[in-house]
Image (cartoon, rainbow, N blue to C red; front, side, top):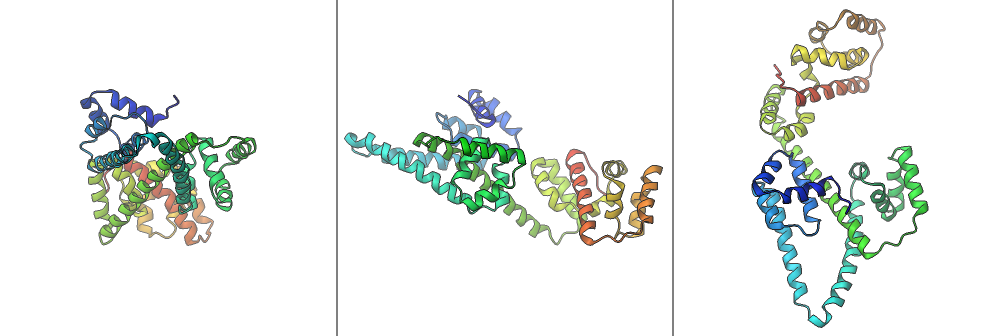
Length: 325
């Protein structure tokens, strides 16, 4: 049996005693917990009772497990009420129709997802999975999607399409549908997170940058995975001027002096001096060389340079016990 990382994790969790499993789960990120539950619900021969015990402290995930179990029980009850003489024939017919129908319905959902989001959703999947999705998508959508892949991946996909002679059986519809259903559920989780972030931004939009920083630091102390998601939205380029000395020096080392100069192009002399004082003689020489060129920089180029530095600030914030004054 070929198992991926999450499937192996599920079987490992269920093979341990409850205390050990709960301890492992507590060390996972929120996203990893969600993905393990999603894989569990799409796998065969799972001990749902033990799964519930393991995630008993995760209210949202426990509700999802209970909903799935109730739905499964209702389906089994419905099947058991079918007359015994016709049971096998009817179940097989319904199953065949359901697998293919559900597969097609899920592919339709893919057509409602923005192209870039769909690409990000499937790009790390195995070639066979990407290929199956592509051949069932609308031709124009599939073509645009292929264009987003690297040249090497494009050639692999084209070879796969050319050599494809297999008929999709009901068993394969079932297998591919499980994968696609997982991808859709994952997409909904991402959308859910994005909606939460938008709500947080509405709540915090009246706060000044200093308060936002303090809140983010407190969140990081309690929930690092949430802080990682919020950092790009609650930190700004202006945080550069209130970083500790060692982090300012680190940023100066990690970017080109030209990028730094352009990012400071529209800043006051006082703010520029806060950064310049941490430069080495060589860096200062390069900085003044850029200044003496007397080039006019557009807002777009300035913002592009600021975003490069903002990315550095975000990485430093997540990776260090940071203080922002």
